[in-house]
Length: 378
Image (cartoon, helix red, strand yellow):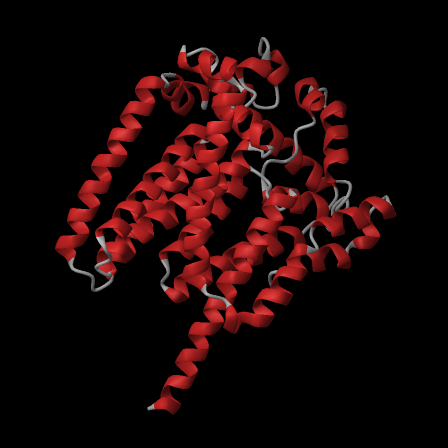
């Protein structure tokens, strides 16, 4: 529970470093779920039904996404017509996410986890000899969830999804489940996924550019984005923009060691630094750090990255210790997402990680309790 609450505890420890008392309280308020979730969930860990919760989450999220897609088609026919005609395909995923009221990378982080869990339940349905209707439902939920990852189409989420598939497959191979059934199920899944991916790329030719030339364009302009003609069009979501942000955040963080600039002052101070170093494009759009480790280094100094490592890698430890593919995949998704974004800066990222961290911790405690009681039962 203390580990889950560690970002809040760090804010309290260094609260004196905030320039504004009110903004400091607001920063803490945003993170209070990291205290509430473990208190109520881990405090009642015996009642947590791990697999049922995840299965309900996977199915309900997929159903909600189908609803939101239907709503998008009905409410925004002009946008749909534009995308069907292959116009401005680069904005499609972001517009769809905005119609729901969620930032696209945050939405796709959820969807990546949903898709990996859905694949796990596909294997489980065949492992446990479920009825054919249950198997078909599991496969359908999995395919729909993967389609939505492609629709929102953020690079890190798609890469994480594919890595998550490999993790699930690896753990299935390690289990004593019939290898022939695993290979047969995997072959069917690969064919279906390949078909969906092929059709999606055919209908969205921008996807080829996004994952190649667009991503790595103008890498010689790190820290000099204003030299690019219309950078908001050409490099807004490119790697060069993030590297330029990271460079500025690192330089500013080093200047404010060992305690950082304060929890409430990270973004304002970074924006001031953009202006001071004459980076007008970054200053205009007030980019945050887009890296959770750098964000906490800037805010809290030396202790910041240590707390981020403790927070994120404890999730990885739980997955490794439990040998659970879904928890390991969540760790990989959340870890890599925070290398290119800062989800502990956003309420949705804080609540998302805190909720699942607490559920994973409850499941880990349940399994430890069973193991501890096993010798007595014998």
